[in-house]
Image (cartoon, rainbow, N blue to C red; front, side, top):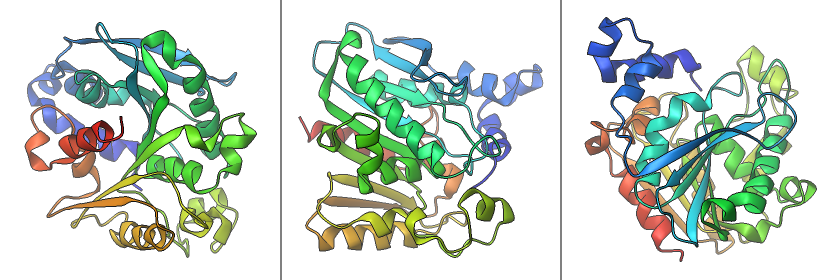
Length: 286
């Protein structure tokens, strides 16, 4: 998974004029995001650590019973910031979906499975509090990109994390994985070997926890992804289907690892149908 600076550089291309005006890449992206139709509640703490916070994007005038998604970003389990994802919040809050973008603890502060445990804690918190934003606790979706897709998938695959956080796996209405690593052994990067406690620790792989039917899933990948092989998506989908789990796979030709998440941003949504595919997936699960 790329470092966050890689994503920042990619997002910086969205706002050359703003960059020229000495704005940061994050500010450049945020300047292009429409602000109407929703509001953001910042830095909502779901745990005591400074990184255990989420931003909640709430549709204006949200009717009771709105669906909600909990999103985890990528960053190789080593970096990342919820502040980067205003575009994602707008993409779905503008369509009546509550979006929670969660920070979580990363290496070197923690190692596996602490970031998965943070994900479970964030999910339990959202379930307990989403109604105050107009959300339906029975319509919660887990989603993420790259390392964040891994966290979302581990929560759906190994139910022990949700249960330990006081959450019921049945609360997960669906899972959306974007360019996720689900079956990526052996590890070769020294940092990843340290993070996951070895190069071949099978229990760290989401695919190895699929031992029965799981919630409906939408798995998205790009054929030009050289960071997380699309084979991760194909192998996980095959495993899920072997247990009768409903799975939709979307493969976008010529799209890379950063490009797939960039396609959710204004001005770049024509690159893939990811946004509409996600909206359709959520709408089908009323």
